[in-house]
Every structure is written in structure tokens, then in C-alpha cells.
Length: 407
Image 1 (cartoon, rainbow, N blue to C red):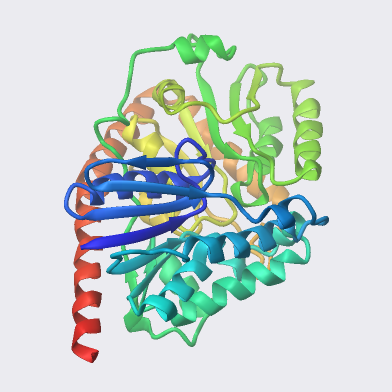
Image 2: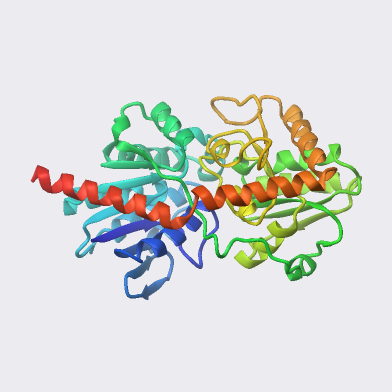
């Protein structure tokens, strides 16, 4: 069996959870089947079972298009490029709207089954219009067209499955399959190393609250910064936050951090995407890991933190509720969510509630250790990549057999 996997992100050009997912999944799948990855960028490699083929958007679009809709046009052009020469592919599998039309077109042109994993849904991310401008209408069209035509839609959580049924009620529920994200248990585990902390100005001797993620409305980092005013003045807060969606949100975050620093000087802002090993060190020594996302189909960063035995304070939204167990591996913080924007209706209350749970853990290191150990055990029991790859291959096999039966 040979699967064609389409993704925007692939190492070394990874900036979000979807890219992490495809990186690990493709390598795990390649232990048993042939995998051909089509991604954005200059990547090109061949292993025994893993073949990577990068490509670039059309130059006339990249160099000759102005406006925020440029990204959507680049995505569509690259989808057309990537499906020109698929040889020996038995099934295609796409990740995120950026490549969804490649799967749609491959199904039509090559007559192969089409699997689509949704890591988020455009109708539930209204703030993307801030990033994509009028291109948001195009990204929404691409996603909708593909998801309605896919032979199987993989939801990364039960919450995501419910969101799919809500956003796209025409999708047959029997075509939606829940397969969780996973984690490399050997790589993500607690370490005693602290070089990454000292290199970035973090004091290992002072307990700290950690955030890891992109600067985007979805990840809710501004809500955590708003919560800082309700934490003790000596609290060390580490914001490992880079890759802003827009200059506007980057400016907004900077202004909030500057204000917060007046009374809380121990804010360390690492304004870049750090390496995996650096992140593991940051997770390992955090007193509390905070995930204040307003929308999160899964939230792989919570798995990473739990694997490194960090207790988690996270928003009670989406797939996070299936990863973090309240009062066992951390705390879930509910908020009244606007159904259109996904933002908290009362941001101030949400900030206070985040701070309340963070404060509880800052004062109780024994509970932190108990939550951290329970988090590691939960990750080991449920979220290994080996189990997830087997579930994915089983789905591929069923779809290929169904396709044969209909011929």
C-alpha cells in the first residue's frame, strides 16, 4: 500500500500542531506501508518507505499578488501542482484546508479513496478573516468542497466530530472517524537539563508558568497575559510565543506584556519558535503549563506538557476536554463562549478564572507533582503514535477494499 499525504507543514518548516502531527504520523506509518509526503517548501528526500516531495506556489501568484487573499491563492496553486504526477498511489490523505483541494482533485483524476483529517474548521475560526482577508471566503470554500466529498473524515477528537456535524450537517456521520493525535513517548519525557532555560533568561530556581504556542487569536495568549495581574508580583511567567498571525496581534500582545511587566517584572518572552529539545526542557521544569486556547480541536501541546510531567491549566473547550482530566492531570477552566467568534463573552472573568487555578497550583507543589505523574500515565495509556498509526492504516485498508468492491 502507498499513501499520498498532503500537508502544508513538514520538517523543518513546522509551526503548528498539524505539522507536528504529520511529521510523527508519516514516520510511524512508514514502518508498515509506503508513504509519499507532498508539502510546501524545498524538502526532497527518499528513505526506504518514506518519500518527501516539496513544492512552491506559482511564482506569478507569490510575486504578483497583493492583499491578504494571496495566501489562499498560493494554496490553490500548490494543490494543482502537487497532483500532477501521483504514481502508484492507492489512497490520498490531506491535513488542513491548505491542501484539501489536492485530495479532492486526486480522487477525481486518479480514482483513489480520499481521507481528510481536520485539525480545525474554517467556519469556527472567524478571526481568520483578520489574517486571510477576503481569502477567508476561498479557504472556507476549499474546505467545504473537500470535506463534503471525502470518503472518510478523521476528527482528532469527539469534540471535533461534533463540530464537523454542526458546521457541515450534510456530512454522513458514518464517514467521520475519531482518531486522536499522538506523541512520541521516548522523545517527550521529563529531563533534568536546564540549558534552554538559562539560555533564554529563565531562572530555574524560581517556579514559572509556561505558555507555548503561536501568537494567534485561537491560542488565547492575550487572555493569559490579562490573567497575570491576578498572580503574585514575584511570579515568573514564560511566554514561548512566536509566529504572529498578523502585525496587529503582535503589536497588541506587546502592548499587553509591557503593561503587565510594570507590576510583574519576571515575564520572559521568547519571541521565536524554539527547538523541540528546548521546548521539552521548558515543559519539564514548569510549575504550571497554561493552555488558554479559545478554540482547540485537540491541543497537542497539552500532550507534550503532560508527557513531561507538567500539570496543566487549560480552557475547557474542544478536544482539550478529552486530553486533560479535571482535578487529576490539571484543571479545566470553563468560559461562556461566543458561538460565532469562539471568544469568551466575558474576557475579564476568564482571565480571573485562569489566574485562580494557576495560583492554586503555584501554592501546592505536591499537587503539581501528583497531577504531573497522572498526566504522564494518561499519555502513555492512550496517545502513543504506534496505536494511532495502526488505526489509520486500518481505515486506509477498509476504504481501499470498499473502492474495489464498487468497481
